[in-house]
Image (cartoon, rainbow, N blue to C red; front, side, top):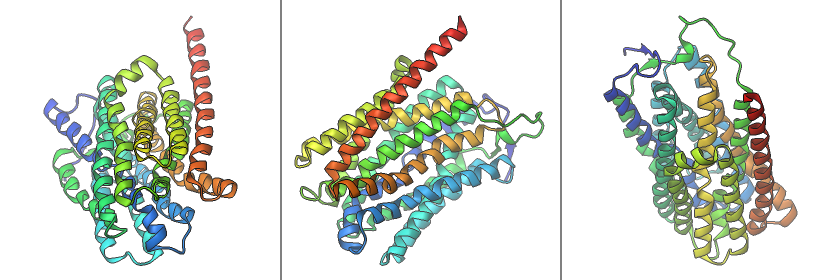
Length: 408
């Protein structure tokens, strides 16, 4: 296959860039498949694996988030060294989605099977997620990139809505029903094959003078924020099916996840306008939305209507906090030798570590303090999130003052 070098924005024709844009947006529909499996967590605990605690099952599912950064870093090294292109990594990852769907039909009776499916899903996601953002960073200028980032986040949330609704319904018949939806990875791989050009990473162009390859310290900051945000946000979906077990089933939990993602759809379309007005304060506003939602979940566990409203409020944060971190890193990673590493770090590695640590830390701590009460868990994490929101706001304020002094 002909593999070309990229030479910066404008290298491709407008028609080709439009194809890349639509490929980015369409694949975003299945870019977060893990949340589609969340409605089945309570069924896994009570029916499929009754001998396992909620924390253990959540950790098994979170193994996808453990495998994801390993795959992201590994493929980033291969892409930077021109061993493989981003296009081929994405196709491989999407094919792993489909393979996971096939594996679920044959391996679904043992707890070890859940672990295996989680690891395979994590590897696939680690291949797809950072490299789809890489396509965005490589081929679009800053202004267009911010707009597409918001649209991408909205479509990503729309995809999770669809997958969670159907996955929740399938989980009422079999706990592993949601995995069947991953078969959609195969047609997505075909789409990428025919629409995305096969070019070498800009970071790997050896015709240029080799730069230092150091990451801007602000990239580390945004990566830490992304990690902490996902550690907090993951609590919502992973505990939902257990939280509403007295007023609903797996299908109801699927509807709840749909409300969660629905909030993200709305805020994603407003992302560009919000960030233009608030800058990095948008991250703190997003965290405050999580705080309000978690308080509502804690206090109104018996009301399905208020639970759904709370989920929608929490969901608005996903299309603001993470896209803001990712967009800012795209403006900071000007060193081409570090761009692929920075992309993988903020879009995949940091959020995946946060998702993996979420049940390990929050479920275990709150279980030790409050037992199995999910209301207490949401309250506890709500306190954590508002403290974190204040810290981020303070850093944003001090950073703004420093920037003002430097321009005077």
